[in-house]
Length: 255
Image 1 (tube, rainbow, N blue to C red):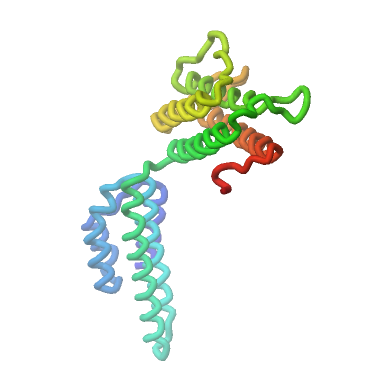
Image 2 (cartoon, rainbow, N blue to C red; image 1 turned 30 degrees about the vertical axis):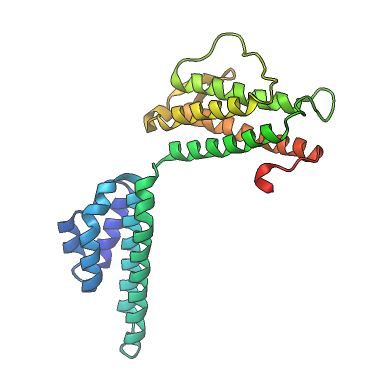
């Protein structure tokens, strides 16, 4: 049984197999009956969710079963009751993991596109918050030859616009937009630029991510271009936080 489940786990991890009720029944015959009934009853539902998160859940359950069954096989008769209780506890933990994680699998899109989109959302919230609390200090800079508070915010808006154009196949070849100086407009400009970026990123397919594009005079895959810009913006976020602290302003998420 262990070899059969191990093979099934490997096939699930490679994404070449979705367990069916019949296949699960056949492979799990040697498994304790209550757990076998639970798993096979849920197999169709798990398979329906499809793709990475459901594969993770199915693999998690099967690995728990495999681990528990191996311990059971190694147990000596005098310790059998202890090991059976331990195995049943492992099964209960696996069942709880499935119960908790399945709603999450339904609610969240899978893939690196979702991860990039979430990161962009985090940056949006923090830059927008800083733009609000730094109102009236947009001209401040730590010294000559470096960007001011407002310069950094405008850079982020421009970068997002450039990246959206590159990813969507409509690069902006016109003049740079007029810098925003109004503290009332800056938070919305930042929020809107990130919303557009998130929409484009989450709309990309896996094959789209490997398409080559030109950005900042270099060739990148779309995936690498997104990663490069987001990493750069995290550095500018640190810069903006330092600017705020230098002016005695506490970032809103730290209050």
